[in-house]
Length: 464
Image (cartoon, rainbow, N blue to C red; front, side, top):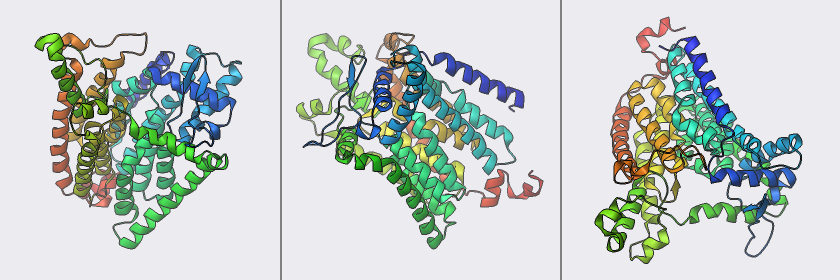
């Protein structure tokens, strides 16, 4: 049992750790976010992608001797520009200091607070008799080492899309179709990765907001679509009016052209990267030297093709979509929020494990979704903590506590690169996840009233 005092103390500890980590430099991505925030604060966000050109230009942004183009959707740029405006007002001249790093990181940390609140509220809303479960869900995310590494220590922006995406699924499960659509659009316009969960949002709208009836389901999906379209028009119209629509589409399209098997993600393709690099290094380094050396850098897809192997991009996409479709099919009749969140976690996990071009931080969305599911489905708490540990290690092994900080677990301590062992462990957990998911989704869920009460029907009269 988590008492009120322990809950409040946990929230305070998580806040203190996050505030203390804000000035840490994070990864190289933080430098890019600084460039974007400066450009948005000193110019027009609508022109950050570039304007015109044949082919459409990709504007090169400059700040403090560094340059970068933009490859994030516009909502993230508006958010970074807002932080930049505040920072520029407090610190004239926009100096590149740890204070700027802290300001940039405050964005995802604020979103993390939102995620924690949504987790607590959602479990209380759908399981009003289980206050302890709501506290568990909130603290399981807020004190999670992987969450701490992701945002406040390393400075990734994943919580910025994770917050509205989680809220969108909760809203759909509460029957609020328009709100769900608006929130989902905000998530996608913050980070394109959110689009992977569109089928899960539709599933929630169809089964819950539509109450299982064809007419109601179509109406709920239509209302959500209308809300999403309205927000898209509001955020994208300034870019269209500036003549930068083709430039934005070209910039976002670059996300699908990253030339790598795995961007340091502990997944199937990192194992392929290790084996391929080691096998071709044997003539130069010997068997032991090749297989016991750490993987220095990701393997390019073009290199795979040049070596005579087929391009893995299409096959990886098909396998990933098949895994996601299997989970959605198994959940086609699900109407309770914990199982809907569980399917969302599965789709996110399948994307991380099976797709090429995936980066280490793309695991993020599994955390809040699985915390929401595990709060009401206790058999999922062990997988939650296993996956939290894998994600935290994935981030630490590559980046420690940030650039120039160190404190990374030595990758050679396990003989074969520890990131390879971690990837292999992740494959095993992925299989475990799939088997447990099948079992959970095959179980007969409780009736809607009992699900919302969070207790068996026979005890309904005693719920507060």
